Length: 142
Image (cartoon, rainbow, N blue to C red):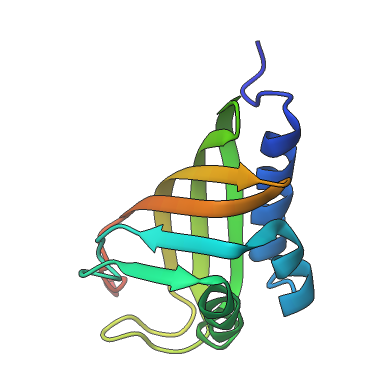
């Protein structure tokens, strides 16, 4: 069995993450997302209190990401679908375009991601992310 389930919602979830990786514009991102979207990011290193966003806030956050990151990449390493739910595992990396605290521009952030996406009418209506970031340490000069 392949790592990725051959299900239409899995294919959509993978294409959505590819679009996010390349900083797709608002219209393209919205094409994957249901108007009633609720995106929950559980507490993690970058968002200690977590976040809950609706469609407009998700699109705005994606556009803001363009100012913080010069590059980002999601690699979906596994996904399965049951009915209208997709469980997805990915690795993420993002290169800072600007300094973030003690981290200089050019520093690469890395995380392992588990996401659960519920679909309605072929679009993501609910997304819950469990992002596990590698320690945020500046590179040590020799």
